[in-house]
Length: 119
Image 1 (cartoon, helix red, strand yellow):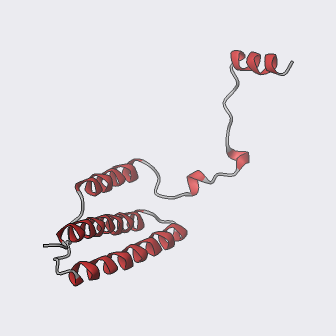
Image 2 (image 1 turned 90 degrees about the vertical axis):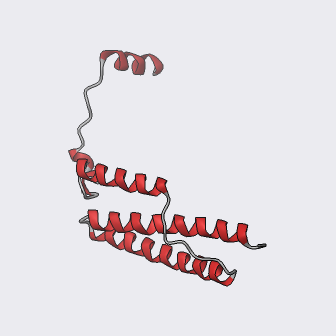
Image 3 (image 1 turned 135 degrees about the vertical axis):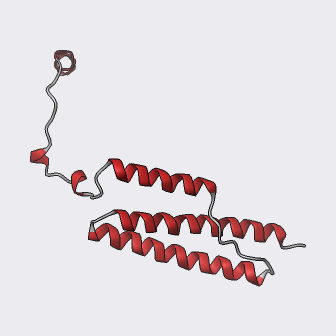
């Protein structure tokens, strides 16, 4: 069949979008930040729209659209779950005011190097 390779490639793109949709769903559920939830929701909608366009094209070419995801996507989602369990679920920890960020003391060697280059 002439369209087999095209259908195969399109189904791979469908799988990628399935991975994206599941990943954004996971991220949406894991965060408590309204801004992040809005972004993940929008990304999910965009991926669903792309997937639907690909599914329509696979069907038009006489193929059977896939509902599966890739193994690499499954591993990535497991990693996201593990990472979420270990780290904080909000973006607040990354946006601390500069006044609360503590700079470690400078080592004498570092001080010497800075001084020697400023001469």
